[in-house]
Length: 114
Ligand SMILES: [Zn+2]
Image 1 (tube, protein in one colour):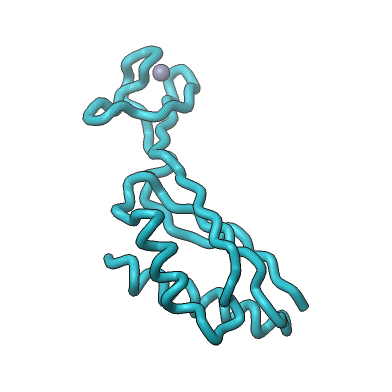
Image 2: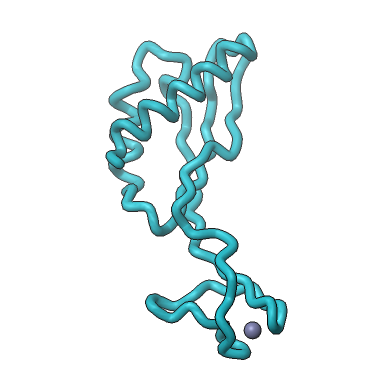
């Protein structure tokens, strides 16, 4: 997936919510972007600036929060962040279960002015 198409569909969602809420302006958008996605902050910000002029989200602040890949070990009840290529629990060395795969791309929240 390309940043441009992802950003375009994200803005559709943002604009739709803003219109429904009778917003005059979108002040900020908080994004959660998984560490494992290939999206680069600079590209996301660049496309955001390219796509927003004339829209409610023009001039809004785009906050990007990165989330790592997370695992949970059912044997010893530990949450951990796996090393590259090593997914076993660092405490008891049992295979863990994936709880977040680091590939999310979602809008956590947005702030609007009405
Ligand atoms: Zn464990």
